[in-house]
Image (cartoon, rainbow, N blue to C red; front, side, top):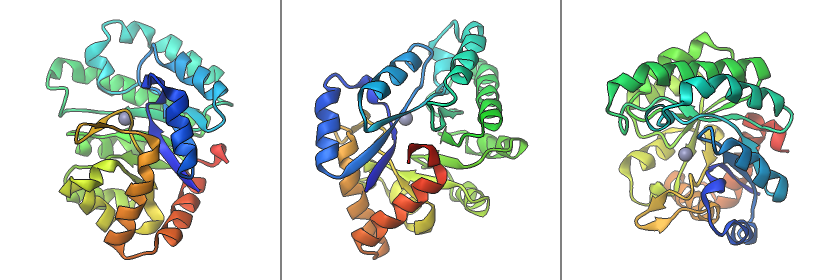
Length: 251
Ligand SMILES: [Zn+2]
């Protein structure tokens, strides 16, 4: 069984088709991650509609620079997440971004939102799905202040020294279809032990001009299998076990 642990499923126009295609390739579960105040209800709605979808709720770090009302909406976002604690399997996508978000004036709000989300993960005893782009040090420095059941670092492409810190702390790393062309992603898949790897599409993000879909994680698995010289059957089973440990609520 393959599980896509990070997909922006609410953003697809033809979600029926996307889910069917994933199902045909043995993708049995897809975690639909939220990212903005306006997407959270939609993530819950589509997860009610499709058996394969499981919702995670959170606010993406780029929201702090896009949504001018975010700070005033934070209380109601917290309430929505608490009210749906039984439905959701994780808090995500959350984190910090200093790479795409260059305007430093947004950083204090990013931090505030991130810490609020980590506090919720601690309170609700849920794992987190983390974005760390360009802010790896700050994310890794912030995490030990919170008691969180499990941490997944999504699409890691930062410095190797922080990746090592993550390994020492037992964090999980999810690999995207960018493994087909990105040396940084290949390196993560090579270095991280098979018992700390997960798979994700981050769809509908584009890969070499092609819209990312959950079905693509089949070829991500095959690429990692060649890279690590482990049979794809064995790796698939191992990654399923890892996913059971990190996101027990989707099983
Ligand atoms: Zn994402």
